Length: 200
Image 1 (cartoon, helix red, strand yellow):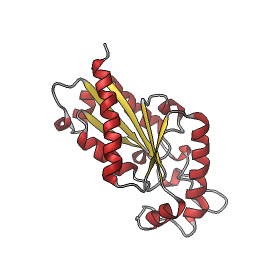
Image 2 (cartoon, one colour):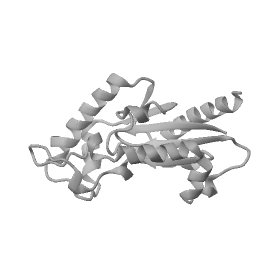
Image 3 (cartoon, rainbow, N blue to C red):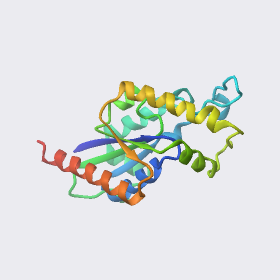
């Protein structure tokens, strides 16, 4: 049995989840672990001098729990899929299991980043991101000025940090069509799966 761990990172509302779900539908023996599922309780999120909750930093996330789930998948991908009710995605005749880890800070957490064989980063311009963010409903909702006062500055800071410590990232233009992006990344991952199958 062989495994492949793929990272799909990028800015808030950049298209990470859409791409990851599309890949999940196309790739056999595949599952997703989404970083957004690991936020700490709202009461545990630090607040900055402007009164903004600091959601866009690693301290706001239960990364130890996320890493335990990734390790659980690494130990036994079949069992992991069954435990999550995803045994219908299992396909006989293929020995490569694929884990997609999706999130906005996955490449900034060193213990997680070293596990990726493939890294993709969705990027969109400021104005597009702001429009998309304002059209989504969050719980708790974004307070006035949150995007410009916290979300975008933290994205720039986190991205600079990521680029200083990570290599081998494929940057994707989030303004391209979902179909075009999915086709390109799916082809890339399929090639890697074939390469793994041929290795022995």
